[in-house]
Length: 514
View (spheres, rainbow, N blue to C red):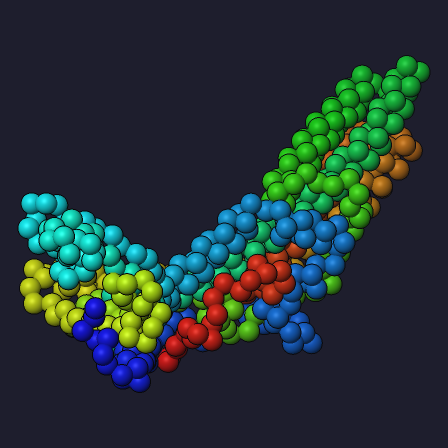
């Protein structure tokens, strides 16, 4: 029977409760105080920072993609992509895995309590000479004078307790828990960044598809017009009113337009294949009809704000900072390894050599076994781990700063192109108007017989090229707007997280002191 079995029950409960409370309430850590690295950013954008509509006060960060895009077909495609895209599924699975790792690590702050019980029977050999339980032999054996060595040893026990529970005196386990939490938050930011990327990719591919569709329509119309002109020229040639050179020039123009139509058909088909890949499913046949190019969003511009806004709006920057905070927490765990570890093993239960006495007050037992482990000679292992942790932290600082710089450049480049595209669009629109009028006048002169067909041919070619440039500039203009929307951190506020939030932020707050 246990040596503690005669102790009073209140003393036993006080000892176990004190052991458990000591472990749970120990809360200090050795994580270095975090101060956000000074962002390598200018206070304002280097150029074109005022291209946003001054009447629009809502930032891109606060505009969900469902509000930013108004084309019903595009919105339907984006919704399918969010539901079916495989990259988003991978990101969601990574969040679930990080949540599980956090739960596992966080559980280390508390003792693993289990219950056990059962009998034990053991009989010594004749050669043992002594019974394992002297005095417990059967009465018949004692009266007959037979050896007690043949009587079996019987023991019954049951109880509840925990084993080798580490009291986190110096915050080693709490540091590792914080590291797991920051990694899970980083995965959550990665999902948000992935969502922004998928939405922008689908929108960009959709605008490209619209542009190629318009180019195909222009090619079809031009080919129809040129085929009619060729037929008319051949009639004139047959009646001696036109020469063979004019016929060949008209045929050349028809062939060029036919090649442009074939190329546009190829691009439209490839655009649809890309959209199907991005949404992760075949394009449904019952989607709403597309709106004309240029009506995909009601917003013509977005306010850029100030560069420092990117630190909290861009998911890639937020994720990089969580990686940095995880590295900070790892340093705390490495520092705590230099200090002693206190572990506890405790139990409360019953034990008896007789089963009928197992559930009596005399059978109660308890135990408390604290152990202190002090590192003396680790041969450089702890110092090496600390050195490696600090090096990883320094690398995360550099990665964070590079992420900030890359984000700053991306927004600056997009804003720099914004004003240029707006000016170019105005110039190209005027070019199309002038080219169309020139082609009309040249055709009138040719029909009247006052000019050669070569002038009409050149005017029509210029008009076709101007229409192609107009479509290309319109596509680039709206793709640039999508890029600004994404670069400023917009579009992740809708449908970004799986049903279960990955990390209870209230339990593991992100400390920021800078």
